Length: 460
Image (cartoon, rainbow, N blue to C red; front, side, top):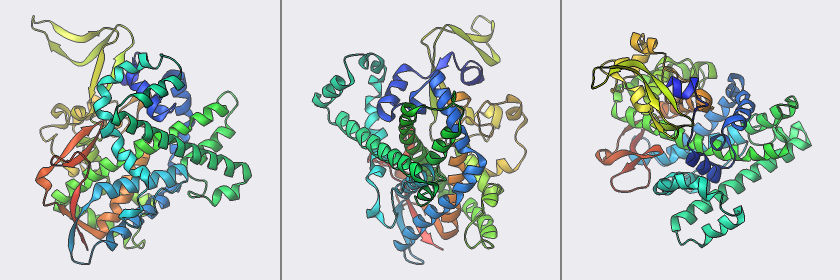
């Protein structure tokens, strides 16, 4: 993995089909660029996710989490238990958090089930709708060279394919909304700082910071107007990536806590011990330093990464060194594998995170306490290349998840608010729940293809 994702990342890239699909859906953002363009965008975006900026976002995370908690309380009676689809609420909270903290834009007042923004449903439906089309993805590099964009759009409009038209309409909606957010932000910045402060996010959102950083950058590193407009695509990428993956991770954590009442209670006591002095809120310093909360989040991200695998393509003939030699059928020790140009390399993130050679015999057991002890020596010695805590959850190298620190902070803020107020237990339909692969793993119930996670909830 180190050879493919870090040392020789210029040799192993995303497939042309993947890049073209990201360009068509999200535009010229981080997911749809490679090489120099990708590095330039990433360099501009990196300061946006600094510790100081994330600390400034913490009040927004708690504000949204408390809105969700209040809405859930209104739908519950004291002492009574009801089943609620928590995936829906977690998706809405993730969208509102990336909206306010990332874009300075409010999608959802989160007052009740009817107040959900249409964008929420679009983001929930996008991957399940696209999934059946993935077999055609490798044709995209050829298709995009045929005719003009206007002609290709006309062909899409004329093809009698309902799901293709649904994807077209979703993409149109996302791009139109992203363009509106960008233009509103640009207009406010052209006025004065006070106008920007009056907006949602008070000028501390990621896009405002990005635009300010770009203005301060030296001329050779500054994005020109067309490139800045292309960052509208990053808005779409931010929203999609932050909502789908983070809500999946939070949903999985709640599902596991519902099944492990002892862990849930231990976490609740840790949170209450800190929050009792801070009026039901946890400071940024405590939020990032609570050991058991951190252990619960790390263990969930280890055992159940929202994106369980990734793929790279060899751009030239090369070899991949093995971490330890294997013996071939003829008895020869093999220390590297020859790879020809065009070979697809499958990188199993979940398998890397649960390798018993590194994590020992209980590698596939959800055990938050493992993070409170000294990590196994084989794991430490292996020097796993992931950007986060000996894990491959957020991948590695130049295409590692740029917002992984924000995702962790969001998980901790939302969980800290919910666990203090509610007790979660498995649904009566828990045996029918399974986690389905739609690029991002999501829970479904029985034969219903629409993602949902029913849990029993009681106010405490």
